[in-house]
Image (cartoon, rainbow, N blue to C red; front, side):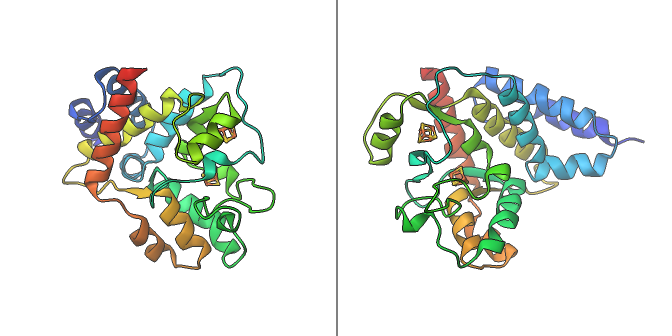
Length: 233
Ligand code: SF4
Ligand code: SF4
């Protein structure tokens, strides 16, 4: 008997912690993603490591064409990360980032330009050294005003920068994946800046993942922030 209906059934009953309309969008995306997979074991794995959630987010992002953006290569105020977290990423994103950065271990990184900059950044060109595998949070964060980004990087409030809706859909999809796989597989999220720092400092993959792994409550908190941001939008 196929196990696909079981996975789909779990998804149909899962809860995300995000707003209902965002959860519905994420659920539809995940169910389409899982339903299209012929290999059930692989579908479960991609749900668990966040590949499915990222796929849902990227499809939603590809449908947008925001106008008037100031974003350009070498413009990197958004890569100055506050706190010790830098943003939520999935296991699949963490592993892809690690693979891109580990060969660069020991080279000067973004922190020689700015102490809070992402270690993935090239300190001279201020381009992302992991651009092709940059996580969803980096893809979805855009701005119409570079000066506003500079102000935000200095801890001031400013309008112009913000996160596009697909990031919220992606987050809801991670929440749904975790709920659907409860008791079956662990779904973890990771801190972008801790993972990137460990990779460029030469840590082994498992050690980098251990250093960057979030407690489950951190995804709950990010989903709560996302829900609040969506209600203000
Ligand atoms: S979000 Fe802001 S700092 Fe980042 S590339 Fe766009 S304009 Fe530049
Ligand atoms: S991964 Fe790349 S795009 Fe994302 S914050 Fe780091 S340097 Fe910037």
